[in-house]
Image (cartoon, rainbow, N blue to C red; front, side):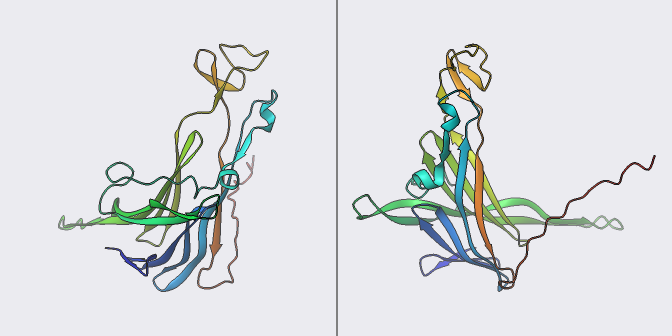
Length: 234
C-alpha cells in the first residue's frame, strides 16, 4: 500500500519520507513525517567501532571503524528477491563514484516492502463472546553490506502506531587468528577456539546512529529518566 514518487519520496499509512544513499553512511532517510507532523530531519548510521579484547600485541591496536574506514555505501550488496527480500518489493538503485571519479550504479542497493507485525488490537466482549482483532503491518527499508568478513543487515521499520525501529543484524564470518604466545592453545584467554589452533577473539560492535530529531519542529530536548528503587526502610 505504499507509493513512491519523484524517485525517492515514499508515502505509507500516514508516513512520508525521502530515501537517500551515499558512499559513507549508505542508506539515509530524510524529512520524515507522520500524520503531516514532522518527526526527523535525518536518520542514518554514521559510525561503528569494533574493538578486539586481546591485550597481547599487536591486537590492542585492532579496532575497525567500519563506516569511516570502508564506507557502508561502497560495501552495499545488490539485493536478490527470494533470499535477501521477500514479498511485494520496491528497490532503489544507488549511484556512487569510483576511484577515478566515474559514476557507477549499485543495482537494488535498498529494498522496501511490507511485513505482517502481529496483532495490533484485539478485544473479546465478555458479555456475548463477540471477538474483534486487527493485524498490524510495518514498512521495512533494508540494506545489506559486506565489510571484509562481516555482513551487516540493516532494517528500518515504520509502524502503524507511529513508532520507528532500527534493527541491525550481523552475519558472515569471524575474524580469527592463532592463539597468542603464552596462551593455552586449547583454551585461549581472550577468545573462543572454533577449530584446532584457530582463535575467534572476543570483541564488540558499537553502533552510532544519527537521529536529527524534529518532532513538531526543531525545539526538541532529550531527557533521561532513571527508575531508582526506594531504600529498604529496615
